[in-house]
Length: 500
Image 1 (cartoon, rainbow, N blue to C red):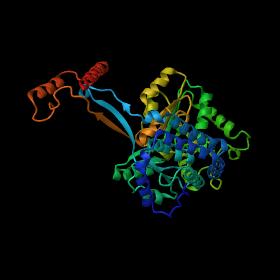
Image 2: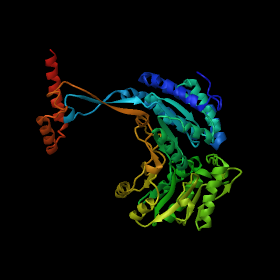
Image 3: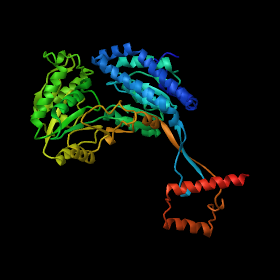
Image 4: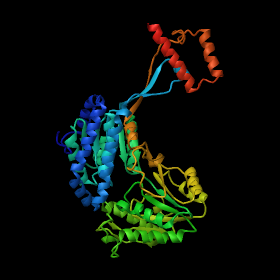
């Protein structure tokens, strides 16, 4: 395979042109060929594991186990798609109707063309590759721009891709915002973006210029509800992990906890104990924990620190944690109470290891608080009362929800769709959903044998045709499927006899 393109060696427009020229041939590849590419890609990722682990240590000071979780997502996604792709690519027959009697109706999935993935930095290997596995499965050509904030991982990704794909099918370009901006001027057929709202808006505006479809996942302020019936120790342990994993730099992390006022004090205490148990087991302080990564850079550190300082200045109480060190990019797992809506931390996504605790008196007030913010990517419910669980599910909306846990809905079950709703995202990723995002679902109707006069529907309209249309307006036209299928079988048999 060709070596990865170095930034500046080839104009981006030329790279795109080459991908566009290759796209028609790639669209004709078989399920077996595409599945082989996915398997070879997964194998190349596993072979690059030492380099991937080293990159993760340098960028976020992650433990190998945390990085391996990303690799597991890539491996399971590739295996799942490769195993099922043949059936997904088959024509999907659809139920006939009275209007299509005698005709064959089906959906044919075809490649969209050239797909762009603007990947972010907090899980660079999984975010870089998993969305594009759907593009591979659908028979597209692709361009990946890894995040410049994870430069070591970006280079590893470029090296991996070059071992499996020719750059005329799958190109990797590196660079900062100026490269992303230039890429967005090109007429890609589909764009993936996982990141924040500011860039998400730019992607949508750019996509509109070329009527490109988009898959956006933009996070937001994910609520967790702790009902009075919840197992507090269990909830505290899981929420502490969900908030602090990857140092809080996870799009699905719980951002604030709505806790029933009757258990607020007990929960805050249990949450602090859980955080210290996991991330200060030695008792020497959070900064000595091998399990606690760091913030990605000083700019993001300053943003999170400013949210914390603003909240404290306006009356928030640090119930646990609160320590920071800019030079070390260190922010301790932190619990805030006594919050008010004028605090920036109550409206901006934190993306760090800080969680805000808000007490609620009844279910209605908890839901009302959630509705003051845009619809979240994830929502979590902790309760043992089944009626409470069902009520909260019925009266909230989110891209995904987990009951009595958090953060486990992404990358764990390829049968589930992953994505947001409105401001937290558009479209779905995962398994067949990624395949569908990168495919044009083409409706096909094949004409069958004539049932009545084949000229009946054409002008000038006969009185018979006018009467038939009028009668259909006055009577039900949605006959039972069994009746439609029976009539179609009769038509098929009759047509066969006519041919003989």
